Length: 326
Length: 261
Image 1 (cartoon, helix red, strand yellow):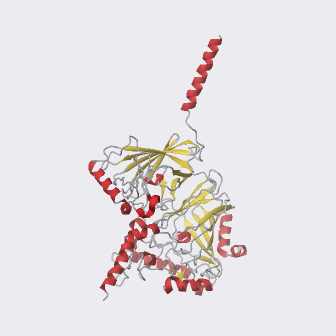
Image 2: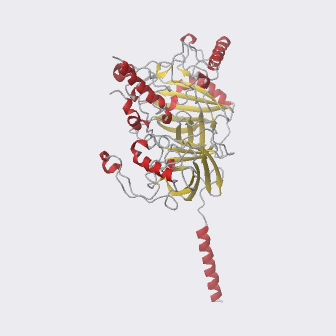
Image 3: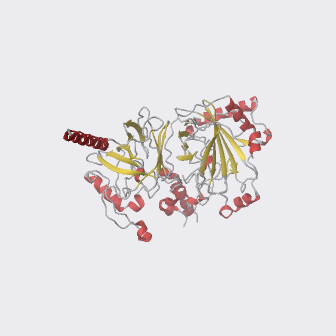
């Protein structure tokens, strides 16, 4: 595991970059990671198979990615949706944050092919049998007998630790605050706060299970290392229930996250997370999300549940549809 | 001479005693030289059931037995009564009658200010160079108090726009931009989106924080009024906030009528 992290190219890049930069210190002497670090990244989670172990785009591939982002931005600014557009519950597309394209090939930097590792046989079986064969709650369009048919995001319960930080279409704000003995990470959507002790105290009892897990942090040089355990088996790695880009993301309650936060220059914080869940994936996998500092970003109050008209309307719509059927 | 000495001693003792009484508790200092409010705090009163004086009473559902009953409590409102305008008092009574389904707490909505501070759940103050963050266990609510140049409220929110400053040993937080959808307690006390709250936090000894809030809303109250209470430090060695993500406990109440029968 340590060897894997050491030899991983992304980890090496972060390490190498961090060597030439010394972050400022808090008044009490900890490396200062404070600020607002919104996710803003036009990089896919997984790498196309054709790219193999290559971690950076060529000039040509990069130009394609930029052009694609420009086309998306142009479409976002259209006043009207195209006639054949799928009806959704999303906001108008000019709200969306597409993220800035970079040369990073994929968020996944380990395994070296940038792909989510294979599911264990146990996890394949679990996924197949979930909800009597329907699978884990995903998109609302599937089935809406009850609120439990929708995923935790649609229910405005949580997006979990990784789901709260992987950049999505909007409200990607993250803020770090520090006081002696603690680091605090806030995620704008869905108003999550992790207050992380640095005093070396043990985790809470394994009987206590939490959507956001139980986090403990410590410093390794200028890197903040956070270990999180005590998860439930209800959340997923991506924010949208089943997973990310259609790939499976639901983990077991044995999930252990190792996050590594390193400032590599005044404006960049490397957020790296290793997902280790032997009951779900055949090996650990690691994401690298470089976060850019934005002092002018305003964290909104994301009152998701309080304004969840969608839930009521999805259920009512499904009942109305049933009533119409003979 | 001995009498003179006695007088001097008595005088000195008297001055010392008076000085001791007037000498306010000096809290440990934070990184910024101000009193250190960091820690986990919780109210130990019945304000969340009713801000005003109230006797014991039955709860809304006999099925929960004594567990759902209302504990008796002395009020935290200065002067005893909330100065409602007549129409608002009628609304408060209606709120109380419908509290089982209408109290935003039953729906797991964000608690608003000041209610967040005296719910029966702990909260943590994080006094950082980025501002003073209040992290509430209930519903994962939070609010960041801006300690820099005061910011004008944008759109209304549940937890408000919070601007803070120090007045000696006291943290003063001015809260505007509240949406007025939160209640003050389970008794149906409420305000509108004209609500303006000024809070004062003062450490009075190592384990207690005095909390005072002035509540102003000319569309609901005939004059501003104040609540005052102590917040207690949760000093257990292993104290930490845990998940109380209560949405899933409110879904059947909110959506049960729309599920497939």
